[in-house]
Image (cartoon, rainbow, N blue to C red; front, side, top):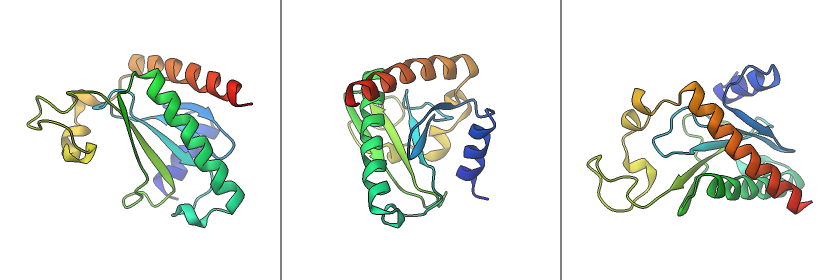
Length: 156
């Protein structure tokens, strides 16, 4: 079983502390590291490796929900810009990385100016000081859940 499927199983058992909300096509979770404050993921319910492997209707809905999720993250965490990536090289299960970005969020780490999140070395981005702590996770979830629920209510 892949790592993302394992995390989804923990959501189903109500044992995933990062879980924010279940949507029709995926699960919204807070990232376990917060180098970029508010970093979240949207995990596809179906275990597929590529977006084009989803049935057309599911794919369209998944993209729509990802758009709602990214808007909620942008609002909840005062993003000036959103970085959204679907990679899957490490975890071959369809999922989106959603990074709220702010001016200067790479300064002070040997990186000047603007650039993609992946300019930050993975070891630095996931280092202990940036690991999400229990109280922080609860605050992030509460803030994000409120925005997602508001947007879903408006869209319905």
